[in-house]
Amino acid sequence: KYLVEDGRYDYIETGSLISIRKNTKDITIPSEEERLQLHPMDFEEFRWAMGDKALMPLLRQFYDNKVPLGAAFRNTMRNLRLYMLVGGMPQAVAEYLKTNNLSRVDKKKRDILKLYFEDFNKIDPSGKAEMMFKAIPAQLTGNAKRFQVSSVLKDDRVDTVAEIVSEMKASMCIAHLIMKKWVRLQ
Image 1 (cartoon, rainbow, N blue to C red):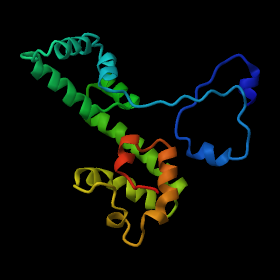
Image 2: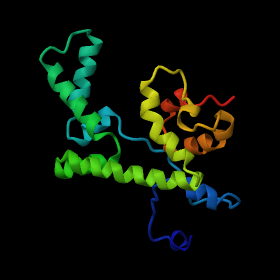
Image 3: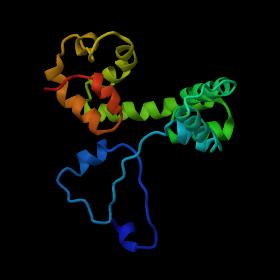
Image 4: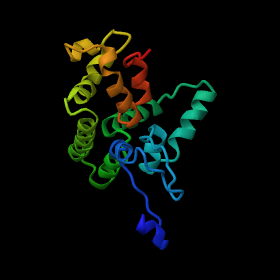
């Protein structure tokens, strides 16, 4: 607060909202604060970060004219696979640009996941939030139409973890698209 009142600098804070939401529950947010909702880079933004401003307009032309990519298909798929490996988290993309090393990128993504796990422990010290988060990949590849809480937490049902799931969603640690297959909270 005192740094903002000083007026010489503007500040940007990033990170999870879990601690902030818990610690400022009954505190009025100062008028100097502006909240922005940020998302990982999509494929187009990733290509921009890589210095490629031409691919997406080219793909739009092919799509609009209903013309097959032909020789450009292989290169486009290589770029898409690279995006899937690096991902859209700005720290991971920056690490790739700096080092061109996928092992270093993977370490950076694992560091981000550790922060998520720390946040999940703030939501639920019992570890249920972390266990559900770690089960997401297996649940998404399965044929189930929704997340099966009982397959992860043997003694729990949807109604017993509804608040945990709600807080995970509010923390922005899990994507909205995943929520569609997540627990149906009705």
